[in-house]
Every structure is written in C-alpha cells, then in structure tokens.
Image (tube, rainbow, N blue to C red):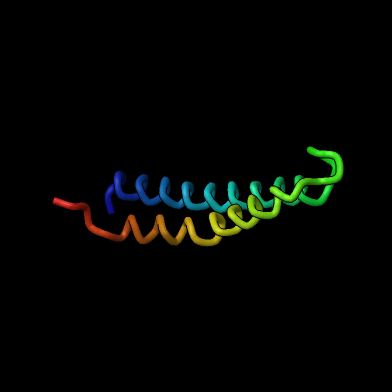
Length: 75
C-alpha cells in the first residue's frame, strides 16, 4: 500500500471518529437543554428532537460515509 493510500484511509478513519464524537456531543448538549436549567430555565422541549438527531448522526453517519467511500468513483 502506498503512502497516499495510508494517508487517505487514516484521514477517513479520523473523520468517521470525529462524526461519532460530534453526534455524541450534540446528544449531551441537547439533553442538557431538555432536562436542566443550564441553557433555559426549566428546560425546553426542543432538546428532545435535537438529541434524537444527534443519535441518528452518531450511529448512522459513519456507516453512510463508509458506504460512500467503498463505491468506486464515477468515470
């Protein structure tokens, strides 16, 4: 495997992990918004759908990226 291939796969691995970490951070912040007084006094209902979106991103975005990267480039 060439150096370029190793760099490409390393960068893709890092991107996939950052997407998972970002989704998890969104979930944690959304739960704080929803259930605590950190951002809004008494919490706010909008935190629940944001937390759900963060979960979807955390679980399914890395898989979508992997599928996208497995396909050969269009000619």
